[in-house]
Length: 318
Image (cartoon, rainbow, N blue to C red; front, side, top):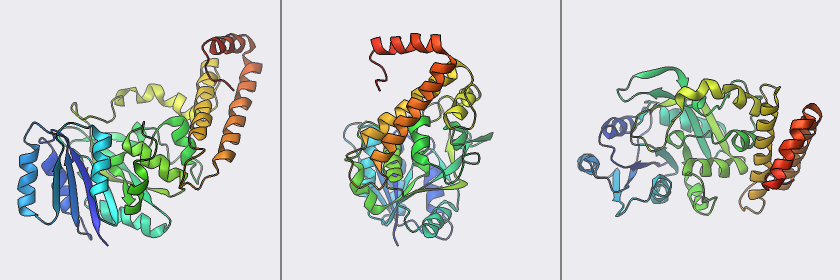
């Protein structure tokens, strides 16, 4: 078994050493290959990487882009260059727990049909200090402990947004063959997660297997950490953990159910998936219509006004 790491860098000199050390010093398993795609850094990132390559010449493979291509394309490039049976995605500024590989592969072993595994994560600041009481799943409202099992992951990402942080994700090698042709308009982690969910092959570990760093210079991360409390009720309503009461809440839930219906239609003709998309479309549309009926009965005047407005603006056509 060969283990690869797909690591993307861009001006990451401040934190890259800690991340590389955490990847190299894993318990139980040896990392066989670290493929690094640098997105044309202008700081000392490449100098640091080359020092590691001198020490570990058979492990490190460094590729520098001539121009900045952005994180999604850069990760897709790094993944394509990996040759391992399992490919772990890694950000430049996080820190892996020493048993990340061990515990991730244990999920694969327990679930033979798994093609991808993601996990929860601690949050740390720029000084490695733990941000208490919050995890990466809190930041994306993946309320795993409260959701009925087995969790309908497509329902969650359709209505709630992406819940899979790429820095926690590991995939089997053959998945890289599907990625580039799948949903070009989203970030790499959401793209991979959606694909695997539709293939019914995405699993997760509830353990915090990395320390995910929050800092001012990160390209993609938890930008609205301090808005979590204000968003909490609407997110819980979307996840069917609480019932809507006001027209605003019904309206918000109706919008999310429509987005699920719309997203389902988007994948109707996708290849290499196992979920019955037509059945999903039918159920999603039914949920949307049922909620609108309830909203119409409960708030008839406001519903009529908003429906007319939607029609004039060509929104949410049934």
